[in-house]
Length: 324
Ligand code: SF4
Image 1: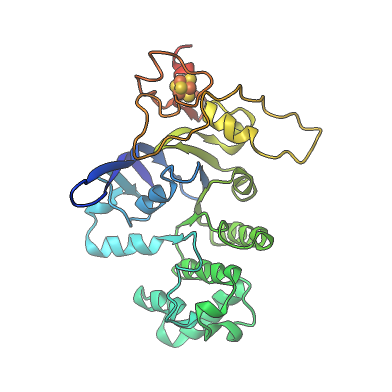
Image 2: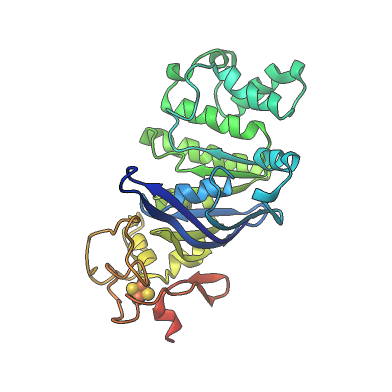
């Protein structure tokens, strides 16, 4: 998948005071076949919009989304159908992502039949296998239940089974554990991680929690978002060991370090402000300048920094690196 200069704007407000909010501001981003990419950032920074743009649910206001080299919004209907089958998403909220009127069997079998994944006579067996694989056993105990009869963790397992049922090439997991019980989170993350390897899928993992990202993405890449922009991207190891952007340094300095022998990333000097600006009214120039302790007067507040490669495959958008 490749995103080229993607801008997404939403109209908000009432009929009399309508205004445009730019939620994604010029995103350039590639996801390579088979890799795991984590996207991290605070709530409201545009992560979910990014996920939905990649899944073809939201059409960008400007820019292009390419899947296997083709612009997804210029695909013929048969190709678009294939794209929708190939890219599946696990949503954040297991309480609203499953239709409460349908049994688990109906929820899982509908997309399977719609996309002709398997012959109708084998659907029951296929659904049973999927439920077993995501840990809902024996499957007969779950197949004819409704979502409200399941716990949050069980519902998220059903959502994972639904995503897997179409044998996708790219799985997008949008904060898949943020709304389920803390005690179940590791099991769900472990399941996604195992299935990624087993099915040979590419994984895009969206989160506000760097600790879960380290767990699931391992040796993959990490993109850091701030107010609708990607401010740093590189391998997880490089970004965590050597965070370049002051915002990434802030995120990493907030991570708990369980091993006292490990030296922490240097602490960030005091922030200029603790207020997080709204994406509806972002600051000019570098969007982090209202908080950044390294703020450069007359540059950071006026000129938007470009995303540049500072070390091999490690990119950052910050004037501290363009001045060197
Ligand atoms: Fe801080 Fe300036 Fe870099 Fe933005 S561009 S992160 S304000 S130093």
